[in-house]
Length: 146
Length: 78
Figure 1 (cartoon, each protein chain N blue to C red):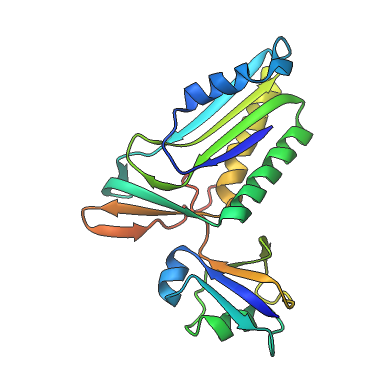
Figure 2 (tube, each protein chain N blue to C red; figure 1 turned 180 degrees about the horizontal axis):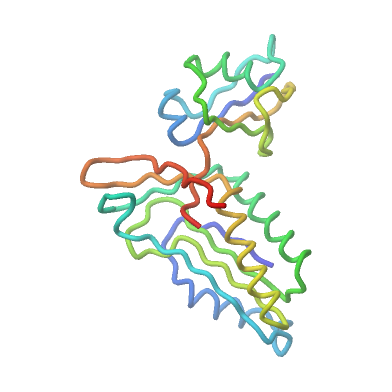
């Protein structure tokens, strides 16, 4: 189980392959891998986005991401998980977050992946500031969908 | 001893500082820390944390605690 916060751009697919290769204990033990990758778009809430800065509360972010990861591994029978989250300055098309889950079967892999991304987005202290042609603006939280 | 106060994102910009240590005299709860340190009206949607755990505005604060104030987190649409 690994959670990483990165200041620099990363390639989620390369990181997933590398991580899997670095876990010899995983080999032969999983039949399902699910992946979620969140990427910065060039358009949001009616404005073209030139860049985005992700501010975070460093130790609190790490602690809460680790906690969500522990919860997912306790709730579902999964073999391993990897969470990578960016902070700092991002450009459109840059991956923001990547969640990968390895499990024996797809049901647990899908459920844990979904839980991880949903929980970290509402619990980890990150704040988005977008750079548009009109200037910088803090992104307002999305209304809760029932 | 003192209380460490941190401000993040739009709250940091509104208050005009990101980090401060304040004397714990007269401080009982999170709202007291805001009053003592921020010196601007409290925003409606303000969130707070004590020692990196989400906290209520009326939650007690002790000497040596780190209290943080920030807006709702922005993880994006579901």
